[in-house]
Image 1 (cartoon, rainbow, N blue to C red):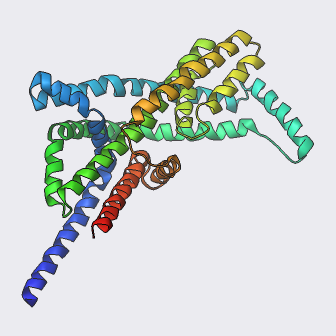
Image 2 (cartoon, rainbow, N blue to C red; image 1 turned 90 degrees about the vertical axis):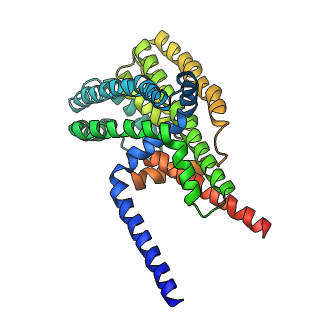
Image 3 (cartoon, helix red, strand yellow; image 1 turned 30 degrees about the vertical axis):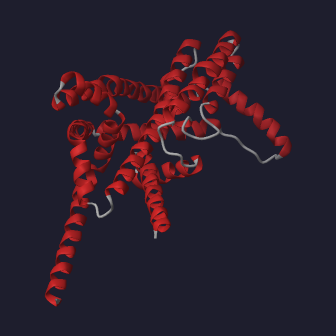
Length: 339
């Protein structure tokens, strides 16, 4: 009996040790696997339709990967390059105190009003803008300096995306067999993780990207400089509850009015209220109705905490961990109810 216990503990120790070792082996590629898995979940409906028409898992997966490349990554590379270019140009202008005269005048005006309340208030907009643009450029430089690593990671993510589409259900079946939980509980966990991806990616990220693109288009139409750069900032701002794209649109509208472009200012105001604003109200309920029902404050903190702990991929990983916690708590609640 003692020998059997020793063998059991030895086996469990080896299993835990190998699992820990494999975790560190896969850790450098965690972000690649998460992105690929997320894409596989989001584009699974398209893959299933392609599978019905092509009747080949490999061809359907290849077609889905090609569609993602054309619709997402090609525009993303073009847009990212334009953002970096405009950030560099704006940084040079701010560093030489060019192109920000009206902003400095506006800041001086608001500062004079605020100093009535508190004479010690000092607003240095140019310094703040230089620091913000410097941060963007330093991070963009880090990305573009590792072009080889970026291309390698991109190819790996597309390869993983292909196999997640083709063999994803087989992987889920294997995990279900190995899991000590009941098949019903395993299915519930996987379903909640899927819903979390739809909530975060479709209900938040896609809407933010669409709003950022519309901001860029509106800025180019109505003559606001550096449309791609401010569109990217607007996409990030759209992820913040109760603030959203207003923090980008209002200063741009004020800029047009202050520079005498009243017609353009009115046009951008209408564009912001309709094209940009209505997207959130029209698409979000449709896209998020398949998602998880977790309080927005918890989702916000899970995103921020995930970004802080895991880096950019934490935007997805944080809410996924949160949804997994809720799935396990729900299973625990049901177990208590039946005991």
